[in-house]
Amino acid sequence: MKNQTAEVVIIGAGIAGIVCAIELLEQGRRVLLLDRDQPDKLGGLARESMGVMFAVDTPEQRRAGARDSVELSLADWHAFAEFGPDAQWPRRWAQAYVTHCTQHMYWWLRGKGVKYFPVPHWVERGQFTPGNSVPRFHLVWGTGEKLVTTLLAYLQQAQWAQRLEFCFEQRVEGLLLEGGRVVGCHGVGQRDGTPFEVRAEVVVIAAGGINGSIDRVRANWHPDWQSPPPVILNGSHQYADGRLHDAAQIAGAQLTHLDKMWNYAAGVHHYASSKPHAGLSLVPPKSALWLNARGERIGPQPLVTGFDTRDLVTQICRQPGQYSWQLLNWKIALKELAVSGSSHNPSIREQKWLAFAKELVFGNRWLVNTLIENCKDVVVAQSLPELVDKMNALQGDDAVQLATLEQVVSRFDAQVRLKPKFRNDEQLRRIAYARGYSGDKIRTCAAQPILDGKAMPLIAIREFIISRKSLGGIQTDLQSRALDAGGQPIAGLFAIGEAAGFGGGGVHGLRALEGTFLGGCVLTARAAAAAVAGRDLLSI
Image 1 (spheres, rainbow, N blue to C red):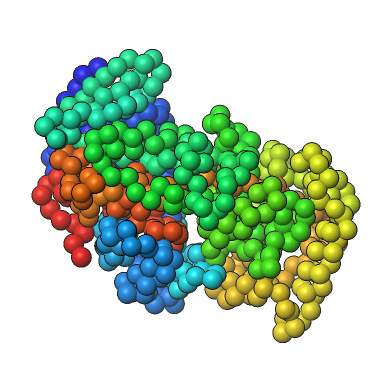
Image 2 (cartoon, helix red, strand yellow):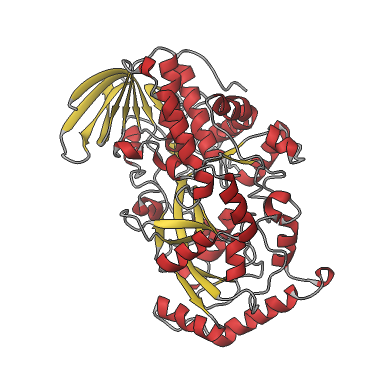
């Protein structure tokens, strides 16, 4: 690849780029998709994800007894987002999302062959700030891998072969400007450094966010989280490094809300990745005890997953060492421990109902054994003294004291063994609340003590903050046109997906209701393609 032309060049072949290309090809456009990765990695971070979508008033919600509406979801969104006075476009994108996500994302994907798990999950319920009032977390049956392969099969139809071209391992370094208009891009080969230039009528940036660069994560660290932790694992795409943010800014685009990030609190070192600082994002068991570096229970409000992900990160960043431990046993791990992403959920990824049902009933032995055998952050023991020794040996200090851990565990277990009406522990109350919904009940222990001879061995997991998604980015209007500092569209330039903060340069505000990332990629991509054709998809 040296010099090429196209009607539209899309920089980044993740889910946003793929959706945008589909829409443009259906218009009869000639499209060039540029990507830094190899052909087998087509689909970006979406391919690695669980593949979840936030949608409003769906058949799955109705079957679960959840009554949802645009008004309710928008109220929840605003409560969680805590938008500031400078969030004009994020506010408008939030309203556009909840108004149009079911028609233009959920049903559009179903029309392309995407299927959803029959029971929506209920996450981000809110802790001190109201979150999702009802379950809205729609899991693609087959995970993000199936989402990507389904759309790729549609994209790569023979009828479009003459108008679609992929160019892989191409790193875009900058945009071409003429007379105030973006007319293309330039860069070099990712492997060999061969320079190239592409001229196009329209340039669409779909290259992801900044969270694949730990240096940029640290530079934009939110003040709520104090100073960045000594260890931050990378759970984002390795090429989501902000390079195209810089290029857009040089071209006049406004970058906003880059300190808003969706990081996770329960990252462990990836045992099979070539990416620097790679991490896996655990879905922490609700029945585990969440402890600080000294083995003390983090509180006074105990940490429980599923209510406010951002607050979990906030609380752990205030702890000594800015990392944490989860203490559980074999029985809790089998029922509740999970890893986010397609690679660690083979029964869902491969759409094997029987295998999935067996995991729900008997526990996910494959996953627990895989982590125990391969992940350096997991230690196992038959007693608390042995466990403390292994925890301290792993960290290389003596921060965890046996007496402290014995006291923490004995107090918690004493509460668990009381009759439910006498339990005065906030973690147990939240577990009981979560189990009130069928989607959580089957995956959450009723009341499980830590020291239980029938539930051994004991397991401790050392966890670090793990970067994931950028909530800020290139500011855009409702047509996904990149805006300059004066709020005016930059001719020829669009930004979609995470590059645009999933819409408007920060549609989520401070927190995300989850499932809105992939959904935001679809909606921003479709809005951009419609705008190229002179249509307004997301009018509000």
